[in-house]
Length: 107
Image 1 (spheres, rainbow, N blue to C red):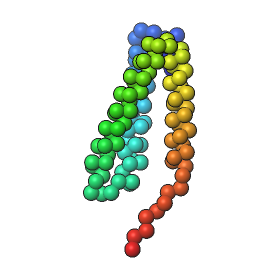
Image 2: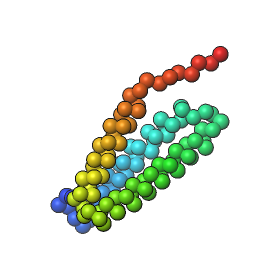
Image 3: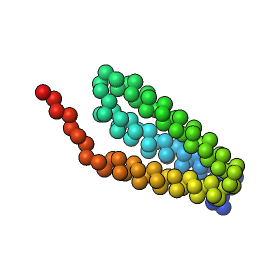
Image 4: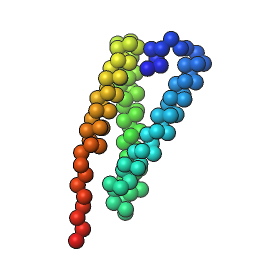
């Protein structure tokens, strides 16, 4: 949302990089912590690599989509669409994480 703020130049660049670094620090470890217990021990490394690859592809796709929206609609509508997408993703994630887990029964 810094794109629509009155900040510009060095201040906006530094604040954007700080927010970007905070985002990665807050999400990458959490994603691996969520994926680790779900994956079987013999496939854990491969599974985590696959999760990271899909995440990187999703970041790429969302960046391309935002760039296209910015080019087509300008900054304001593109940023509003991105904010709506974030709200939808947060709601979907909360719904998925709130579901009770089914424990495996071993005999």
